[in-house]
Length: 158
Length: 158
Image (cartoon, rainbow over all chains, first blue to last red; front, side):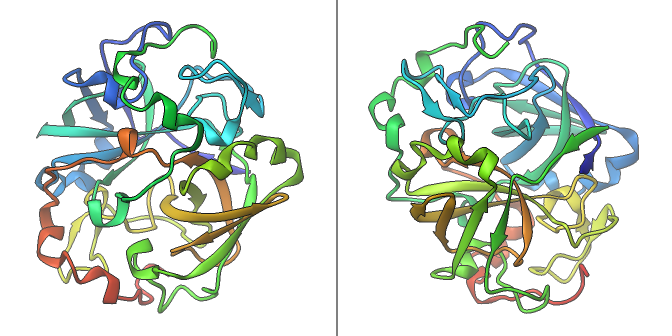
């Protein structure tokens, strides 16, 4: 068993699981804040040089999981690990958001697709040389490319 | 407190913390396998359509953390969250690797910068529309761009 602890809280306009954007792609321009707890504040130094950050967080409203799910972006059952569904054996969410500015221990971010009140687990700098890949195949998602920004969540992962 | 459990094990040629590549960028071509435990095997369906996957894993050899670290790629102290250093409040590692093929419940991967025996926490499909950003600023890492692939780890995070 591995123990994780919240290091902050993510605040967004999304207070319900239904009607949320699917991925930051669908949340363009949506503003939120990431409040880092006082005891971790010193770790934020130098972060303001980065335009984008990776947020890892706890899908705290997710309980249990199924190994086969019908994702928001499809109408047929898929293997869980080929999807970004929130109900997972380890319910860790990952979003890349734009960092506008840091005030004290509050990060002002944009393009945030996260539920309000979500516990923050980690912040990493987004570095294309580490994190971006080209010439990529995206399996079952190939057919929905370009439609993600218009789709919203429903209550299926409640 | 949030509890996580290993869902598999990552096998690589890297058995020591020293001399490892820094990020998948420095591990181009390095082959490894991701063994997913039997009980999660059904979740791998459809994953083989993706050329790249995101591995989330436990930095199991990391204990404790400092909020200021001197990263491998720099010679001055930086705020922890502006680095990818393994010793973090929640020691979750993130690597994007190339998926060559899946045999039963073993994923054959390439460009893997992970220590042998690392506990796997999650697998997510890598989708550029979700995970890739352009026109990015990378703060203190700007000056080391292009040199990452030639750098190796030392024992500073032991």
